[in-house]
Length: 208
Image (cartoon, rainbow, N blue to C red; front, side, top):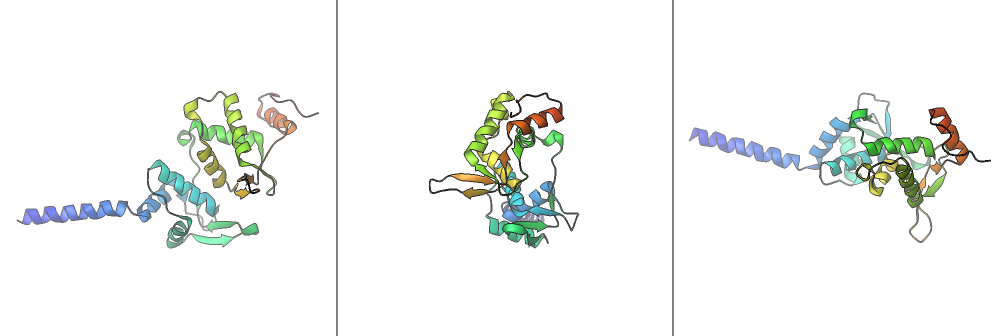
């Protein structure tokens, strides 16, 4: 009889553990340990970048997402404060997203970072470009690099990567057009300079 009671107690503990793992707070704690550094009290990270990272983590684990309000409460519950910066930008204080090691980065991530560095200019926060056109240009870059279909980034993943970097969206007109703000494509001369600096040769003719 004593053994049966012990088994029942163990099963109850297991059931409680399983139920806990279904809750958003459990998912949040796992993400926080895996993806975020919280050692520097002065560190700042855009609130949108943290939410995008958490949603991407949930997608990889096939877990349900939480909305921005619930996510903000979870951050506050562990002492990650909220602060407003210029132009309504909101950052979270006391945390920083971890930088993935090279072995953890996919081919799609590597090509995205290369495209961003070689083809895009983020120096003007007021610059803007049509979101669909930006993705089309990225796809062309990937095609020129002869990246296999399996290693290519979807438009949804592409948008999330941009949002994680603080490159937001804005509605432009009544036709449903969406622009990305804080980014523009470099012109031919700028691209030629980047290629020369990288030692890749003048792959694109400089503008006359």
